[in-house]
Length: 368
Image 1 (cartoon, one colour):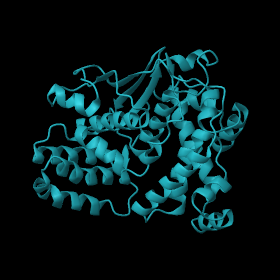
Image 2 (cartoon, one colour; image 1 turned 120 degrees about the vertical axis):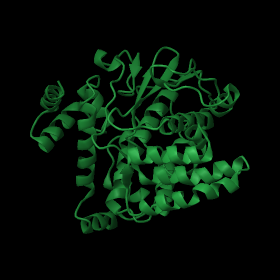
Image 3 (cartoon, one colour; image 1 turned 90 degrees about the vertical axis):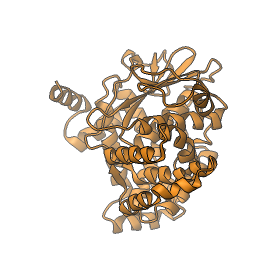
């Protein structure tokens, strides 16, 4: 079984990377504010689609209060989001609210527009990028991506230390199914939920493309992909189309979250661009439609620089990846956009005054 450790072929991968992924969870789980806003905006669209617009008035005041409370914040409490979704679900009498809102929400979300256009990727690589998207926007769950000979499976592990609403998990599942259907025309061959069913079987068939199994050990979505195109020798590069997609994504995001600082905007782009290799100041400036000098000046006004932001994003992700024992240093260097492992090794030691191996050993000892 192959995990999303890298784009290398299974033959070339270290054996450790072929083990099923162990979930990694945030210490203080949060959700990106624009993700929550897209959920709330999707609620009105969903009710309109089923001729229940009048019922939106029952929760409108609560929704408006939530959106006002998020003003100026980039992240909000993940547990609070889940409990508010439960309240809205109860008021509307909609037991499968997250499942129904997922596709509406994903199409309201500026970041996900990028993923609807990436069908030049293999399905496995696309799922790996979707995992990156999900981990950027929410800490509610950890996502694993695994591949066998003819199947690709995404596994959703809810955060063990907080209350996680079924609507949060089911919404993510339906969003993923919607994105892959839109991009590749594929429906899942299997969906498994840990909870019991909340809808008639035909409703699940219509929403997800298949009839799920319930009360299973894990929440999983499986796609059969026997005709997968495998081109693992080619390094990921930022094509002209991908550049345009990311640029459009950033413009939409800026319009919806206008109070974000330049450094916050750059962080979003850096996390996405690491999939393609090492981002440069010139590339960031082009996407943001400013000159490199202007970008440098804007960031300097905020007390930072492209180099510092890139190092900070990489350090955060490096620590996260080092907690996942199945990822080798080669895999982590690749995921962080380094040219080779030696460069990653030196950079990590400069950041933390310890080697990646020492950090991993220390953390392993801490969690024993």
